[in-house]
Image 1 (cartoon, one colour):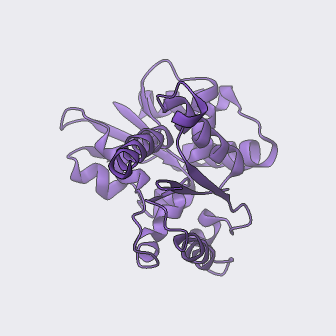
Image 2 (tube, one colour):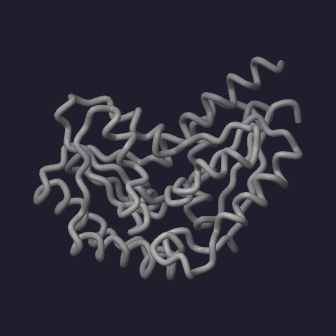
Length: 236
């Protein structure tokens, strides 16, 4: 393949499947040959990112991420995508592993907000993503106010991500809407960022109708297609 990208996925697998679907749907193709060339690495056995971030005695996912980047770099893709929000906690270490660019999903999502400077941007995701402020610097740099969930809302988000979606593929629409309702109403959010790809599954299945929701995984898919088409044209 002259021009291709590599997806480092499997964190979780169903969310990675959604990302691939988004990429394919956003590709302006009218024949098999017009779709994009890519390699999907569904590395599902990488240790849980949030668990390690919250408790460093747990298995560390960083060596696994570094190993797979080193392996895949030998194939010389144009760029990598990393379909896990929490894994971007390790981004600065990961870019030292390879000379090949890695798209930064949180940074791209923050760039896509495009709202007034006074906008209050709520972020929901794993406890590791929220506590370690993986999104905060990018949102603040864009001039917006970051709004974190309360402990009670965070507990609901964790239940939805880990107990519902990851454990049994249960996209609990009622709980998803309840969480977003509280963020928009109780915390006066103007925009809400879905800082976990499991939440992308909920939004894709039952889009929230009462407020502006930005799905970083969809933003990543859009940027993936844009960059892949640009690279393909350059190498044609």
